[in-house]
Image 1 (cartoon, rainbow, N blue to C red):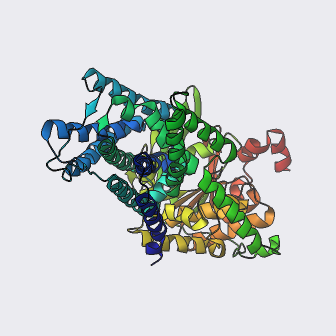
Image 2 (image 1 turned 45 degrees about the horizontal axis):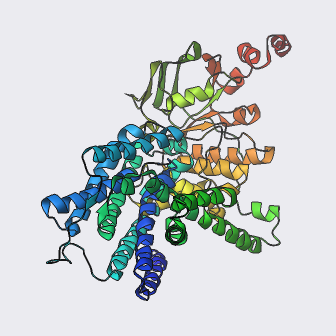
Image 3 (image 1 turned 45 degrees about the vertical axis):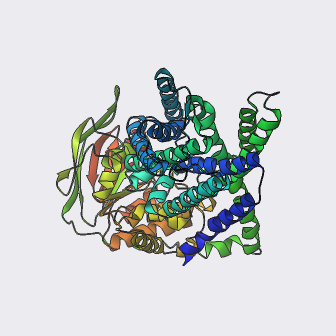
Amino acid sequence: MLRMRSFLPPLLFTLAYAGISLSVTNSYYQLILTLVPVWAVFGLSWNLLSGYTGLISFGHAAFFGIGAYATALGQIYFNISPWLLIPIAAMLGGIAGLLIGFPTFRLQGHYFALAMLAYPLAILYVFEWLGFQEVTLPIKRDAPIAYMQFSDPHIYTLLGLAIMLATIVLSQVIERSRFGMALLAIKQNEAAAEAAGINTLAWKLRAITLSGAIAAAIGGFYAQVLLVVTPQSVFGMLVSAQALTVAMFGGVGTVWGPVIGSVILIPLAEILHAEAGARIPGIQGVIFGIAIVSVILLAPEGLFWRLRDVLRRRTGSKATAGATPEAAAANVTTLKPAARQRAAPGDVVLEVRNLSRSFGGLKALQDVSFRLHQNEILGIIGPNGAGKTTLFNLLNGFLKPSQGEVLIDGRNMSGQRPHVICEAGIGRTFQVMRPFLRMSILDNVVVGAYVRAGSDDQARQFAADAVARVGLSAVADRVAGELSTKELRLMELARAIAGQPRILLLDETLAGLGHGEADEVVAVIQQLARDGMTIAIIEHTMQAMVRLVDRFLVLDHGAVITEGLPEVVTRDNRVIEAYLGKKWVGHAAN
């Protein structure tokens, strides 16, 4: 019922827009009303890739133009109806997205954006070289409806609105599904998404394939509206810029952003072009440029997010009026640390053999070998620069070893990608926290649950259980960007265990916490161990580590200097020397 209710606003908006368009009699204004949903759909297609993944595309006109030319040339050379050609164009756009995405996703940031820019420009020159500088669709007076040629321009507007409504509903479904959650996680922190079990390359390829299909379909419809296709009008720089601008102006990463941007910018640009285009050539480009500058200065994430944040602050201030920090903290369930009952050695679940990693001439890790037993808590300690985090990055796939093996249940997993290792049963947290700041606590944890869940509902159940285990159920709907350090640490812990890993890698989980807060997090880790979780933890807080772990592994300069029981290791002269220097060894002996 809640999901069906969410489809009501776009339906009401579409009906209201249709009512307004039917009352318009001026043919030029009617054309503008048709172009608004066209560019809204194109903006939604751009948003599906760039808005949700954060990979900015300057080349979406490649898909738009492929759809326009496929529809036009299909009618000219094969006499096929556009009702059939537009779905064919969508398939061609999807295939183009897959072919473009696979090599281009190897690039990041501005390199990706510039690479995407090259595709429509290259295709533009190809079509000009082939002699398709201007393609006019043939007039079909004997079967106008079959060839989407209507005497009443209102019908084009209604068709455009139907396509827009379908695209909005599709975007809403994606936004609430594993697909959308994966894309949002990739946008906000790709490394954390990989560590949580998301195959980032696969999801980005799905996004660009669907995005290309939608862009090509609306490009095909655009050709039918104008009846003339030129390379510059469908592959040009301004075409890609319009998709980007309407989405950025309205708000990226949201369904309503491109719609808001199109409703405001397209009529403004078109009317000014008609009124002042002769005196000021390129006035449309000027409007889009001003829109981009304005939104960057006043609302960097777009109008939608700006308005939503203002409303949230107002409602949030009313809801929390009179509340004290102590009352807010009381919403988080806390546990108290208890004395650690040392676990009996179980089966070996993780074995590291002669693991090494070099960065040029620097040996960050040298021939590290150890075993991690079932239900054991292994503390990995050492001075700064000893190679502890490098070891974790090798264990969960962020780095590939120069040599050596990482065996999980006897299977060599060294060099595998992080999501593959997560699927094999290893979860982790990070020294520098990597939350998905725009998501709630529960949604953050849902991302981690997908690796083991068979459905969206099961993922939410796994996430709710994980949130409860760390004591955050009462604040599960709070946005991650508003959390304290302790809450963020607990949330990352919940995200790591939501995928039901057998082995948990905790990288300085107590960093940045006060003494009382650290005790609460230690108590949660102890409870996880009592529940059967196998844990390897990096930490500098020795007081907490001694009462928490079963065994220590000590690293210095990338090599293992000793391992053993806490009471033995903490008295080892080599450990004291590594932490405090040689002059302290004599004092420790006395």
